[in-house]
Image: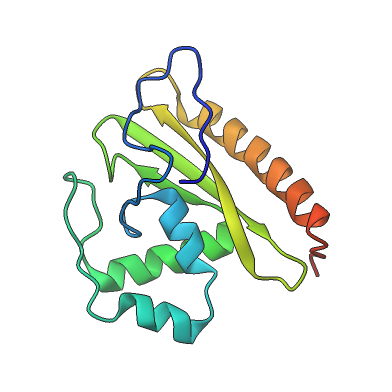
Length: 142
């Protein structure tokens, strides 16, 4: 994590600036990996250790690869209590001028006060912001 903005009532504490978290149980990790070139993805996944954070954590390589394909298809990653119980997170990629993922923006919410419809409104806002940032990086969506 290189930056973080907390809401007035934020209680999600696992994402700290400078902290590293697993690829398989974070929305940012899923986005950053899903958009890698196949050979780079294979390097990351070779001998990757799937540590179980919660009961919802993906700990199977086949299931994780399917999840990465889903991320690319829908244009965002979603983590539903995979890293921390009671917390959902969504992330959207930011592309550079050459079409490579440069970074990602994410949002973390508690499951209870934010329903699926509200979460998807947040994802739409993230998509708009990331599209604008990607365009500033001279990315052209073909």
